[in-house]
Image (cartoon, rainbow, N blue to C red; front, side, top):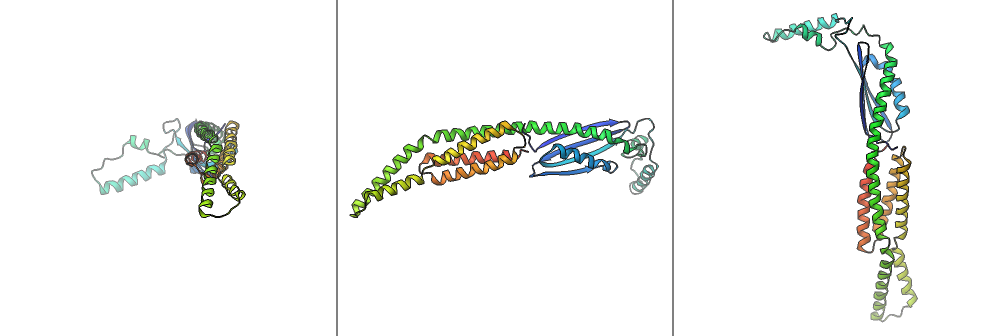
Length: 291
């Protein structure tokens, strides 16, 4: 299975009067780059979460958010006296400046974030819940990366088939083009020598023609492109962490396409090289999203 480095997952889990929230999102990165935004009360669990993410993820810039909310209507909920005093002070200051402002109601206070004391929560007992939440979120996160990876693999495979079609179309044209161009060059050299009245050995002319034919011979480049396309198919079928392998393969594709373009002596080969380079660039953009 092939995974994208782009993914997203979010899960919640309730444990007594506390609800835990975890969110994972990732984008491309050469290596595994973890960033955490963890509520202060849950900071002690960051190391365990980090270990679980590292064990199952290979590459990507991953952001992990871990937070919680308390059930303010649960049995045994206790209003925080310090928070109430703070609200009272803030209300007095506001009403001193804005006398017509409406006063806080009981309902407002009960809904105010942090109005209830967190002392009633023993955070040290949350490790099993956080471990479970991490596993569930990570499963969903990896599944999202797998779905994205499958789409990218299909696009890459489609580009590969388009490249193979170009190579297959151009390859049969090369021998005839070489013969035609060599004959044309031979005729021009012979005419030039005759017009100048210079006595040049015919073997020398044939040698120049042979060198020219070798310079425009792109059979080796086309063969290597076909081999690279076979390797592309093999990597996609094998799956796993293929991003770096495919990125290197794209460099090889690009090298052969550049050589093909520099040696092109007929318009068909020139156009083929341009089309290949476009497809290679499109494929490379997709490859860089893979883990």
